[in-house]
Length: 290
Ligand code: GTP
Image 1 (spheres, helix red, strand yellow):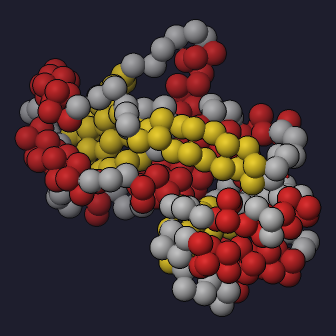
Image 2 (cartoon, helix red, strand yellow; image 1 turned 120 degrees about the vertical axis):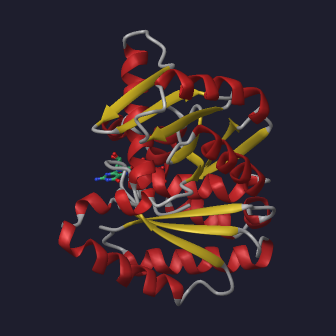
C-alpha cells in the first residue's frame, strides 16, 4: 500500500517481473487491487496484493473492503514517496491503515519503505529518513514496523525486499545452520543463498572475520542487483545465465545454480583451494539442500 505514484508497482515489477528501473516509467496507475502469485522456494507461494491508491480506492479499502483487504495479512509493505507534496495526507492514510491492521492482522510484519531516495541529495538522506521514521513511529500503534530507505535505482530495493522475503520463510534458522556447516566444509569465507528467479538474498553466513576485511554491509544486495542485471542482459541475447567465477586479488567468488529454487555464491580466499574443488563441493551439496 501507499499513495498513488509512490512506486509500488515499479518495485513489484523489478523484483518479480524482470523489469529494469527505466521500464517503470511506462507503468500506468493500478486499478483497484492487482493480485499476483509468486512461487518462491518451491512450495512457498507469495500472494502479493498491489493496492492501487487513487483516493476512491483507498476510501473503499478502509470502509466496504476493510475486512477483505486487511484480514489474514502476513506482511504489509507501506510505500512512501519521499518527495510527496501531500505528506500530511500520506500520514493520515497511513494512520487509518495502521488502525485497520491492528483490528484485523495485529501480528503482521510491517515494512515502511521511504522510497525514491535517489531524489534526495546524498548528504541529506540520513536526516530525511530519520525525520520520516520519527513521524511514522508516532503513528505505528502496536504494530511491529521495520523501516527502509529505498530506490529502484540502486541496491536498497533488494536490501528491503530480501528482508521482507526473509521474514516469511519458514525454518530459515535450520537453513542457516546447514549453510554455515557447508561454508566450513568448503573452507570458504562466506556463502550466500539467493532465490533463483528474483535473486533476493535468502540466507548467508560469514563465520570468520571476513566482515572486517570487507566492511560493506550492502554487499549482498549489490551482488543481487548486479547479477540480476547480468541475467537480464543474458536473456536479451537469448542466453541462459548458469554460473560464473569472479576473481579479484586473492578472492574468488563462485556463483552457480544450486537447488531448483536457489543460486549459491561461495567466496574463497585461500589460494590452496582449487576452483574445481569448490565447484565439486557445490555439486555434491545440492542433494542435501534440496
Ligand atoms: P498507483 O498504481 O497509482 O497506486 O501508483 P504506484 O505506487 O504503483 O506507482 P508506480 O510504480 O506506477 O510509479 C510511479 C512512477 O514513479 C513511475 O514513473 C516510476 O518510474 C517512478 N518511480 C518508482 N520508483 C522510483 C524510485 O525509486 N525513484 C524514482 N526517481 N522514481 C521512481
